[in-house]
Amino acid sequence: MENFTLNSDTLQLEGLKVTQVSVYPVFFFFFLSYILIILANLGILVLIFIDNNLHQPMYLLFCNLPVNDIVGNSIMLPRLLSDILRPPSERLISYYECVLQAFTSHIYGTTCHTILMIMAFDRYVAICNPLRYAAIMTSNMVVKLTVSAWGVAFVLVGILLGLTIRLNRCRTLIMNPYCDNASLFKLS
Image (cartoon, rainbow, N blue to C red):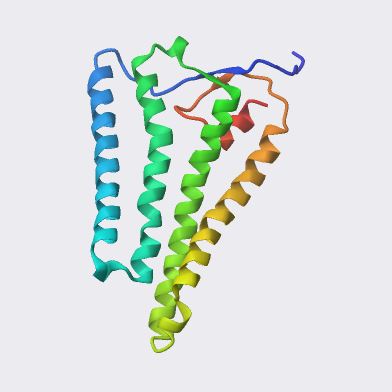
C-alpha cells in the first residue's frame, strides 16, 4: 500500500471509551471537576488580590499557576465533555482546531513547569541571599520572570508544533480524547 497525502480538514477523535450506561455519570463527574477547578482557582486569585499581606513576590508568582490552570482546563474539559455525549462517529474536529488545542494543551504543561522554575528561583534567592532578597526580587523582576515564563513556553511549543504541522497527513483518526503533538505527529 502506498502512502498518500490527505488534504481533509476534518479529523475524528476516538475520545474516551465510555459505555452507554456510564456516559452520564462520567459526564457529571468531569463537569463537577471542571466547576471545582474553576472555583478553586478563582478563589485563590481573589484571596491573593484582596489580602495585602499576600502582595509579595512569592504569591504574585504563584498567581500564575491558577491562571494557567483556568486557561488549560477551559481549553480541554469543555471539548471533552461535549465528546462524551456524542457517539464515536460524530466526534469530529477540524485540523486547525486540533492544532490550536494541541498548542494550548502544551502551553498549559510547559508554562506550569516554567512557573515552578521561577518560583524555585524565588525561594533560592530568599534562602541563599536573605539580606539582598528585597533588592533582587523587585516588582520589575517579578514582571520579567512572569513574562519570561509565558514567553519561553510560547516559543518552545511554537517550535514544536511548527515542525509537526509541516508534515503531510495520511490519516484522520486521532486515538486520544484530545489533540496533542504526538497525535498530530501520528497522522503523518
